[in-house]
Every structure is written in structure tokens, then in C-alpha cells.
Image 1 (cartoon, helix red, strand yellow):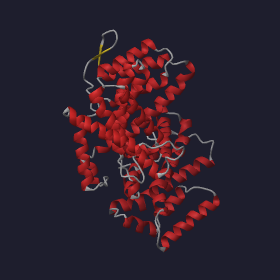
Image 2 (spheres, one colour):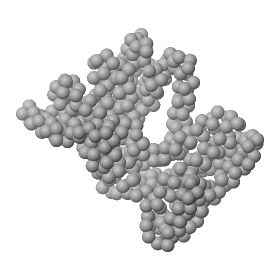
Image 3 (tube, helix red, strand yellow):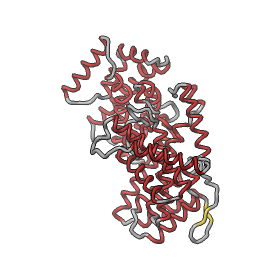
Length: 454
């Protein structure tokens, strides 16, 4: 944000301040689920964030700037933005404000709060603010990156105007981003000060923040090759330092917290592998239940535990069923018209009367119905994708269902890794195109426009 002459700067700040006062949303418990309240809250976040960041350029971290940072963050928390399911899936319903814009504001606010907390000597909170800024900014950057492969594969559903907007955002990210306010050595000094002065920190959270620093700094535009120094003036590479810091934190944990911390670490590593090798940007669009069970399956696979193999088959089944519900069943429930959809409604009523959710058998049935093909045609699904949904997908689901039935009817059987491996490769995509990543890619096109990732 370039400086302005003093009179123009004052006029701009006064105008923004008026907008902040006009946009303020009175506190109403449980009212943020209402679209009007939610949309008003998002507008306040943007206006108050803009005024606060502009005022900081003139006044530094004054009382008004600190209050603006706090008010903006409180509104984000009231709306359930930080870490919410809507953020992970990239959805904001019934509002024109892009999730990229919300997360960019959140990242900027957290990067400024990092500096404020450092000034106040609250080093644990400062480190957490820095990690949250990286997480927020990583969401923004990942949502803007569109590869040639995605475009040629038809995995991107944006209009030409939306793609141009992505390019404009990417240019803005190169010009200004939270890392400009988070010097690498300053972040390291914050951790060193925390280690010296705070013996009662929430070390599990600190360890997670250390891993965030190691994993996301370079992705968000930081220079991971820059040499940094610890409190003893020893030089470190960025990743080496933070992995060493995470190990130091782990050693500080009391025995009753070590197992929980290591389990959380295993889950994070599993999620990282699933994103990196199989799902990429499709991961955040999956239902949370599907993600949770895929993480459990990945952990089982790397434990090399034969006793866990049967549980892994169950995790795969739940992941497939949850994904099919969100991408196939739910969009069909919102459609109306035609005798075929009456047939679907009758099937749904039958399930409700029996008190159960759709299973692999029900989804395989759905994929073979004529009205399902009509539904795909109405969404302009390409021939190869249609063939996948109506042929390959139901066959894969039936094969998984049969082996799951066998596991249930013979609970004493010890499943070997070689027996489960074909299903892992088939559904995740080891040496082939995975069923679940392919389903997620096509499923994005079947969601109602208001529910697509923006």
C-alpha cells in the first residue's frame, strides 16, 4: 500500500473509519448461521481489516490499531472462519465474497498480531499467530494455482473472467503478503525466547507450530535457503532448524502427552502424504468424514500391522460412501422433475424408513440408473467421465463391498497386506488413476454452483 499525502491519507482513514462504524454487527448469539448476518460479518471483516492495516502504516501499533486487529479477529471467530469446515472446503454459501479474500484478511491480521505479541513479550501467542498466518496464506495461494494439466483435464470449472481474477490475485500476492511482516530471524528469535522464558507453555501446540513453519514457509514465499541463527549463534537452514525445534519440544512433553502428540503427528504426516501423492487440491473438497477415514487408513498402511488391515478396508468403505454422498447423492436430492427422479425419491424414502444411510450397494445401484445418466448429461459431463461414473465406479464399489462382506462374516481371518494392497492401489491411485481422486475431480462439476469451491 503506497503512502499518500497527509491530507489524503487522513481523509481516506476517516472514510474507512466511517465504513467500519456503519458495518459493525451487533452481537447476536447463534445468529451467524443466518445468511444476512453472516454476509454483514464478512463485510465488517474486510472493512475493519483495511482500515486497521492502513492506520498501522501511519501510526504503527497504536491502541487504535491493536483494537482494530482484535475486532477483526473476533468477528472472524464469531463467524466460525478459523479452521472451520467451510474454510477447508472453500465454500461460502449465499454471499459473493470469495473465501480467498477472507483467508487473505485473516492471514494479514495474524501476521500483524505476530508483531504485536512479540512487542508484548507473549512469545507463545506470537509463534502461534505466525503459524496461523502461514496456514491462511497457504489456503489462498493453493486456491490460485491452476496448472496446465488441470485445465486440459477439465478439472477447473472457473469461467474465463474468474481465471483472469486468479491471475490478478497471484500478482498481488507477489507484491504483498504476510511474510513481508514476518522476518525469518525474528520468528526464530521468538521461539528461542519462548524456550528460555516460558516453562509452562502448551508444548503440543508449539510443536505443531514448529512443523507448520518447516512445511509452509517456502510455499508461502519465504526464503528457506536464508541462514538463520539460534540463541547460541549457530547457523541453521530453515527446515533443519524447525525440525530440530520440534524435536526439542517433543522432549519437553510430559509422558502422558507424548503418545497423544505422536498420534497427532502421525495423522498430520498421513494427511501430507495423501495430499502430495494422491489428491492435491482436491483434498480440501472431500467431506471431513472421508478425510478422517483416509488418514486412519494411511496410518494403518504405514504401521504394517496385519491386525489393522481389516480396519483399513472399513476405512476405505466409509471414505467412498461419504464421498459418494456429497458428490452424487446430495446433488441429486436437490434436483427435481422427471419420472427418474421420482424413482430416486422413492429409494431415498425407503432408506429413511429403514433408518439407514446409503451404502456401497445403493451407490452402485444409483450409477446404473437411466435418470443418473440424464443427470450427468444435464451437467455436461464428458464421455470418459460419464463412463467412469456409470461403469468403473460401481464395479470398484461392488468389489470393495464383497471383500468387506467376507471380512465381516469371517472375523477370525487375519488379513495379509498383499490381500488389501490391490484395493489401496485401486482407490487411492498407486500405479494407476485412483477411484477416489477421479470421483472427487468429477464430483466438483456436479455440485450446485453456489456450493463449488471459490
